[in-house]
Image 1 (cartoon, one colour):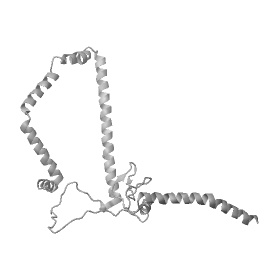
Image 2 (cartoon, rainbow, N blue to C red; image 1 turned 180 degrees about the vertical axis):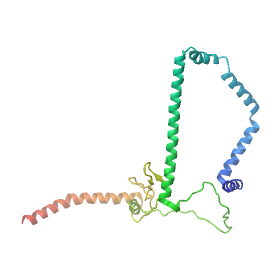
Image 3 (cartoon, one colour; image 1 turned 120 degrees about the horizontal axis):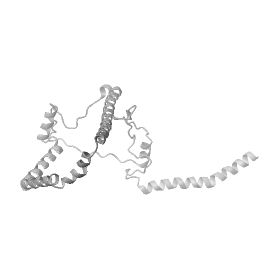
Length: 238
């Protein structure tokens, strides 16, 4: 039933991206089948493959591969077969272990999601599977949402996580004990300068504020510290 809905949505252009690429691919293949001489290509491809794989130079393969095997003794031949069998066994065992590990990880991840989220697990379909379509009315409209740019001070507060709560999703990470994947709690990159802030506060104004803070701290340190030291000496000395 789900696949029928998906096929119906593709045919009726409800899945517009997938329908577009299928249509374009069909058009390209139709032009290719119309103008490309396929009979000529198939015939010469078959000839080249036959001449390459079944030509007289294949005798070199016979000389350098099969003749040395025929000239081996029975013990050497058995040893080579045993070595090849062991190599195949090692490769096959490694593939089995990898497949078993992937299966165990998938099973463990599924059980951990069921244990952590329980009934709140939701499967998000990749393609549209809606039974009924939501057709917008003629008088309906939509506007582009543009978030209001924030000044640098508010962006810094967001970076610190002030009054901001973000709920994590259902993606798990970790091998032994999977835990919920952590997400960024801010739109500002930590340890990097922000590039999006309010136009009311320009970069020059921000640099001026930072520079004034640095200059003020330097002046207080240069003049205030000796003054406080002398004042303390005069008070405690008397």
